[in-house]
Length: 152
Image: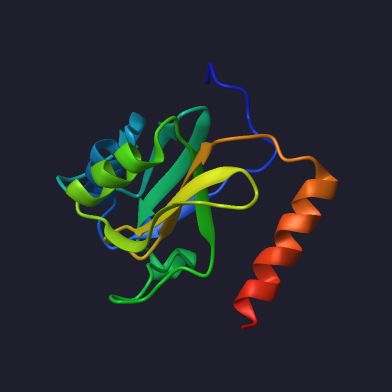
């Protein structure tokens, strides 16, 4: 029996090499592997890992099962956000593990410090450090100011 409760929504990543991805996520984000089905060395039809309190499924590409990896050089249309204690430190760790920078660390008007990396498999990861709680009315003012600055 699985000791972890089933989440309402779960997701699965598909990579050319799930084994390499598991290694990257451990080094970049501190992921903890729960288990790996590996009928042969380097072959991973299914594995599960945790980043913080989130369980993620992963597999090798399996076109017969409609599981396609992002084409080399491609970019996922979705972004995975990770809440971190120190955005700059998390960003440096992800880059040292082999991630590519998409946006440098910076403070955002919505009260977070963020950075974004692309992993070697085409997935985008936003690293988010909480700086302050911004009430809705203040958030609206800041968003309007931000958008008016961008229009110049």
